[in-house]
Length: 372
Image 1 (tube, rainbow, N blue to C red):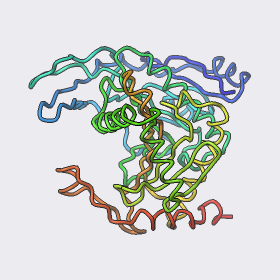
Image 2: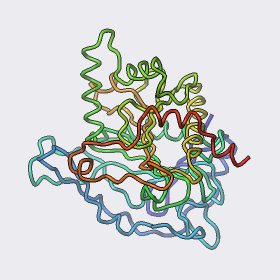
Image 3: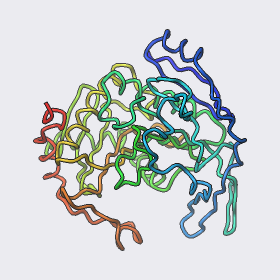
């Protein structure tokens, strides 16, 4: 069972270690503290209301100064050493989660105005956290050992539950950006968690679709569950099937490479997964990522986005947890860029055929197997 222990960095931000044993966790608390003497945290940024879309836009100019592709000996996610004090004071760690020093949302918590109009501005309430998957400087989730990956899954679940209980939070989003082509600014294997004070636009659309289907269907079926059943029945786009999770390329994939990883049981978020489901998720997800990297001779850039149910009561029973993994890579040496139709109109035009992509993933030799 994963043990988590909380401490504070020198500017007051929370740091949480996740360890596979109680003994290791005790050593964490007895270890060194943050000696950097950082200045006090600034106030939250702002959000502005767009009346044309009904969306909130975050303004976070302070993020312009965030760390960008530092040298390995200056990495803020590596363990601290006598010559470099990082964001993680420990000399070694398994998984660490801490409040982002350059957050898009937070550190203040609160409620946004209920009836915004043109010109409405409010603090960017919420919280942004960094999840350091491992103490090693290079890699990604797919390069983790099964044991370490399972600890990350537990960290996602624990943080989802804790953030969901905070004032004003309406959606918790766990994700990993992988590769410079995605815009990654740190090479150290890590992900992030955003706790939003509003339901983001795409989540809002999906939640409304899910709620409408749930309320109209016989037996209160979930839409994601119905799609999973249809994909498993068809089989054309299936990639992997485990005991508790299955992965498929969606029928209406937007991106050249897109895979959905879905639990067989209805759960609203990661925090609701049972131990045996987390075990299966770990194995299936690692194999999926190995197949994604097995498509080409170089690592594939991707965004791995966990869609969790918004915290509004109407959406919780209708929305099923699922992972959406997308990559702009449309060939070994080509990337898809969002042009006029996608960027301006939100109307996606896919360059690949979902059935063919699924077949390629099924046939892919995982990169790890090629190396052996």
